[in-house]
Length: 271
Ligand code: 13P
Ligand code: ZN
Image 1 (cartoon, helix red, strand yellow):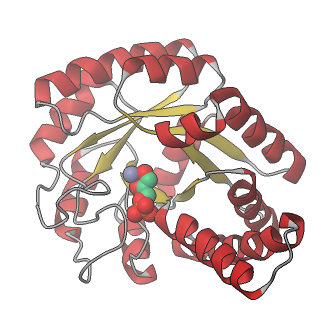
Image 2 (tube, helix red, strand yellow):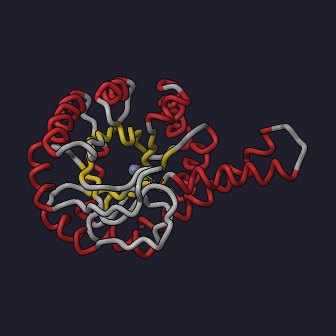
């Protein structure tokens, strides 16, 4: 089943799939073991930085082999691409889905480039996600508010032919400095106005009840990254501070297990 088919079926039933970013073999293993143990599908996400770190072919092969090995239903997704060359390279390498993030571009420019991404993806029957509004990225002003506008979103979806839209409803990437307040009213309006599945970015730190409410209002893909990185690194730090053993094959499994526990819990947020 393609990711676009999966997301549309989730939209009909007010359900969602977890999209987890991985950074190395260990975080991938933690995510896949959680998915296998909970019998849940999962989207494996890669950003440009993770691709640069692991190498495109390494990252894709590892994810594909992992899905087969753990017998997990899953898809490989390019997260927050802001250039079309990367989109093309990932599609060529076997990604099931790409996000072209033109949210910081002028509206017309975002439409123009997203349309090109959609055309490229069609050749591979791949899913396309795009974004409208402001969801602060790491290092950006998390106090700035610019929710996705419903009228703009309608025009954008019609013009571009995207499969899924990332919406700005009060989430930000990274850790929250204050309690996140989600704009459920806007989400509900967007859900009514648009026929396509909606995506929540910045889900790290959003309480379970809020994620569930968002899922009941059209969010079909829930993106989680920061908590995975944080869980992995904190656990590596802790175990290394307690031992002089240099064998990473005894230290890393502790951190992998912690990622697995985190993701198992996150599946409860989307179900
Ligand atoms: P967090 O890093 O805040 O969990 O956001 C994840 C995300 O949106 C990935 O695109
Ligand atoms: Zn994101």
